[in-house]
Length: 205
Image 1 (spheres, one colour):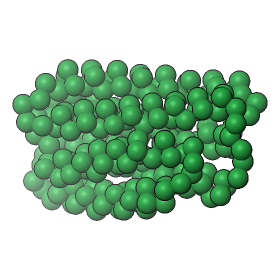
Image 2 (cartoon, helix red, strand yellow):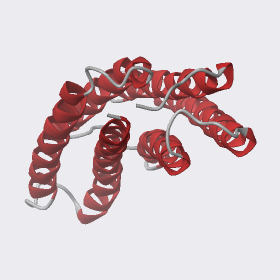
Image 3 (cartoon, helix red, strand yellow):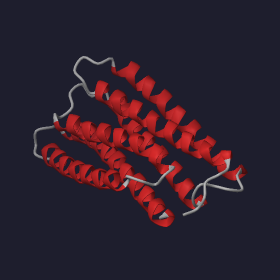
Image 4 (cartoon, helix red, strand yellow):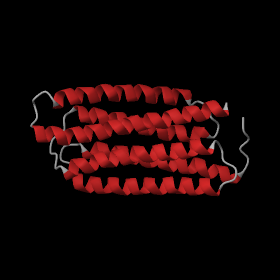
């Protein structure tokens, strides 16, 4: 296993942890957003602030990557992990923004289940980041993320079936489908993060 002795390397771990913790904040804001009686415009504004904070984390990681001679693991994997974490936040923020832009008053009940999957995936991802230093006890993380992504797929399929059942007007179907598709994209992005971490762990073992 590659030795990790230089102080400079620790900065990557902290930045990845910051990015993942910011995603937890975003996922919890999504839960608030879809709650009855929520001030959706105010919450969407907080989501935009989260997305901006995520961008700053990503830029900080890439800046450090460009300046570092020694990195804790492969440069390509650092780049991929940073980009994939950024993708998660982008998709969640886009979903929140669409709810507000389209003035969607009532969301199908299964959207809450979609968001709960994202919230759990966010928490697991944040919990996994500190373990990147040792590369230990990570296999349960990516196995559970894969299970959650499969659950998210099933929820997404049920939502699409309901949207196209004739219950909703065509314009409403279009609006709702964009929201649930972005939430599904976020679940997929969490799996990409987990796959990259698995790749890193295999290379470092």
